[in-house]
Length: 87
Image (cartoon, rainbow, N blue to C red; front, top):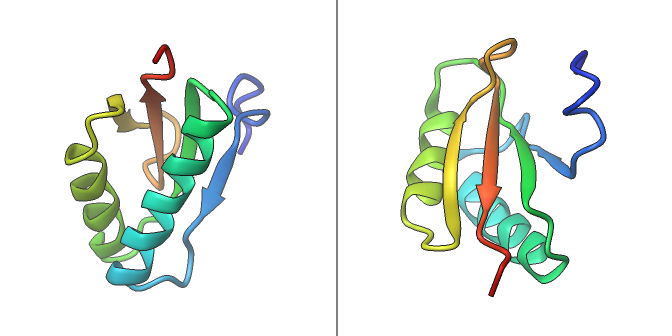
């Protein structure tokens, strides 16, 4: 991760995970970061066939606490997630 603004954010690396494990890990990671009130986190899912990426994005789309998520402009193996931590 070369972006100086992103490398200090909390992250999870899902390389080697299957779709179901990625879904569970993503939910756990989001829950932990909501408790810690981290407004922005990174999910490293890699590129590959895109199955883990799809699982992560499907999971994020169903979480009401996720304000926004998008693929990093410089690395399409990373999703940047903005969380609603104001509650």
